[in-house]
Length: 395
Image 1: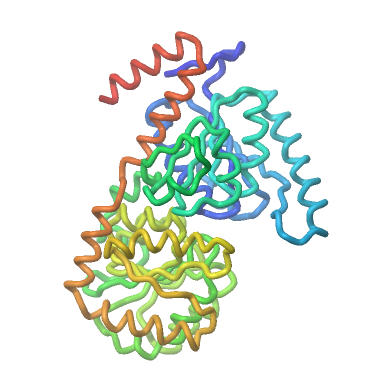
Image 2: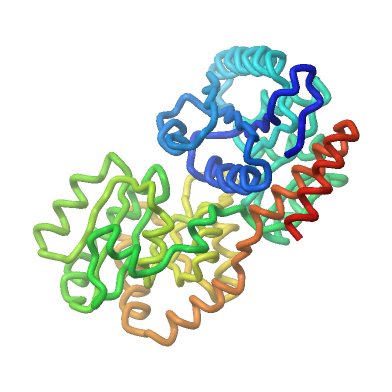
């Protein structure tokens, strides 16, 4: 075990900064999982947002969650005073927390929830790193990258989108170990699905996707005719009842849930995935080796989900549908793809193989090892010696 350089010799504390969506939290959890394998006594601090999704995702994880009073920075000048005030409140909160027990490293995962913790860490001389799974980094990560000790990215396409001099390392996107060990039969059993049908998994990620949900509802007549398929649809809270009732009225074999903590099992059960194109979701899809139909989120200014999707599409691992928002547009677009892929077993299998080739199942372990190296570079001799012993055992 690596000891800290703190006077009280307390266990190592590692802080993750970012929240508000699963995409900001799940890669952090994957790295934390690997770090705990290497250092069982390590402690974790998650500096997240006040959104309920943060508490829901980290529940069951042995860590401390510290919500920050952040506000999204927009182009609207009248919102700037509130954003600035909350940023200062967040910075003070992080400063006080770090002074109580200084983390050995602060790892930012993007978004406004990462900015204040990162800034305070740099001010106090704490090593910093960035987890950036997106092909096109967001404003926060671009802004912070020049000051980070390491920037971990999922795809080579991302490397050129950071400022010159940023210490970018292409390692993949960390995914939880459960995605590597999950199997189809266990996944089917978990959700009450049957083994003699193929499974279509539909997911809008942790918050759901209304336009995707409506596109599926627009194609219920087609799905009703697919006797060899069943549906597992993760809707998000707002559309849950509407989608559930839509399948029920048609008598379609479907399991509908607003959210699941068992995403590895859901992915393992799938034979085809229809999904948003969040970076962590795509990392899970490729790790599991699943063919996918991707609906990039259409409202982001930089269209980073579209850039993510293109990384898979260019390798023949996925198909992309431009989200036209209106189900009268999305419905026919999705139908054309489903009609082909739900009957073309060979094409699905070829896509799955290409997706699997893109997967980086070792990303979480690789990032965890690099984080320990960053800590060792700033720690006294005992910590470095302990790290060398850990690495020797791991090899």
